Amino acid sequence: MTLCGVGNNVESGVVRTAIPTDAEAITRLSQGLGYTQKDNAAGNVDAQQTATVERLIRLLDATDQQVWVFDAGGELRGWLHAFIGLRLASPPFVEIGGLVVESSYHRRGIATQLLAVVRYWADQQGLPLRVRCHSQRQAAQQFYRAQGLQAIKQQTVFESMTESVL
Image (tube, rainbow, N blue to C red; front, side, top):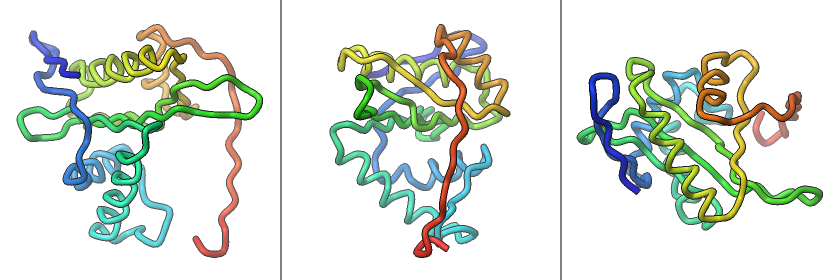
């Protein structure tokens, strides 16, 4: 699906499916928002890009995963990862696993265009769309509310590192 921006405050570009060569830009965009690798690639840019390529290829090969990028004339300004969430005790849904827009391009319609594509995909699947948002990301929460998404619950995420990751 292609959406083009027009006007003074909307960035022109194309939303397209990511390809493995987008991994370098995806890594850069992710780091700009504070996401870092929590694996053996931490601190090593080449290893981080390699890890991103490996994950991106796995996601692109899966039928229940999608990754789109916002391509502004060959420069990636944002990306969105979504997947079909399956839970034993709940009906399936489409969930946004990550949405990142380059900070100097915020408020130019990029996230809105990426969100339109994932909404279309969720509609095609006949599934509701969900997104989890960190409690400290107030601007992101305001964005999702402005886009018509409603907060339905709050939760705390727990994690345990396995010895192989340490």
